[in-house]
Image (cartoon, rainbow, N blue to C red):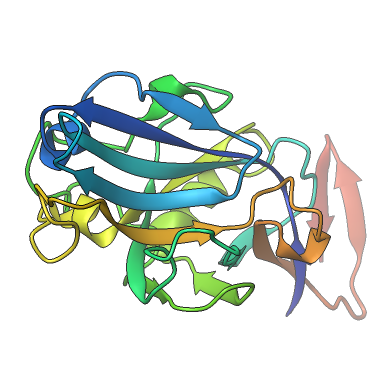
Length: 245
């Protein structure tokens, strides 16, 4: 018996959506249970928090969603490993890609990514930490500290199990990228809740529309198939059954 391993790369739908809270605070924006305020599927993908107490108060929390189509994959076997490949963007904002961390979590989008997906993290509570509630797809947070740098994120057993249940049938294996402060619900060590000058922290990645194809997000799956070496055997086909003696 032997195992054959090979990679596949499903097609992707991606975008980021933000909730803007005017005159409130960033936790109110983070905990919002309805539509985001805006959506982008063409710009670089952002995962950030932003606060400014001036101009009446502007507070945003931004999440990126990625959907991968597995329905056209016809390879036999099972998924044994998965790597999410992201490339950091060339941000025009100095507060992005400065060592800040993000988490990969399970999402539950309704279909094509839209503003309505802002709250659609799997099992998301109305407030408080997401730790041990929203399923993690990578066991630890990833820090981003440079531009145009490739990050290969190993997805964990939770993600592998979900991939195997969706493989070959689902049009959307979906996940989300969120900041570490979004994940914990504690912004006190990240974005100041009410700064007198604009303040933001987070990360930015190239999207599926990047002009450089190698910068686009990828989900790389390694499949395993099992083959058997048959020697001096008798093969019988009977009533639709394959019998080896």
